[in-house]
Image: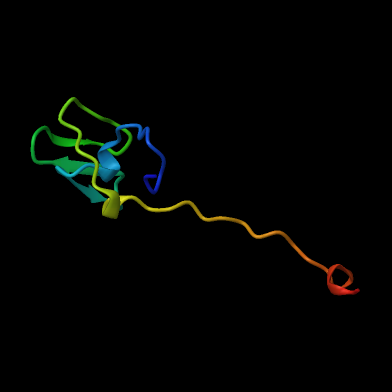
Length: 68
């Protein structure tokens, strides 16, 4: 099973051809020039190491939850 599932929606933010610029929210694509991070094209190639995982929130526990 793939790390983020089998179906990955194309995005320039984690494409092999793009270099993201976090300051202005754009990506420099070696195929298409400067594009938006949420854009995509037919040359999309998934690069799993460029993808940033979502922050998971942990549930809040109280001391009563740990009493027997």
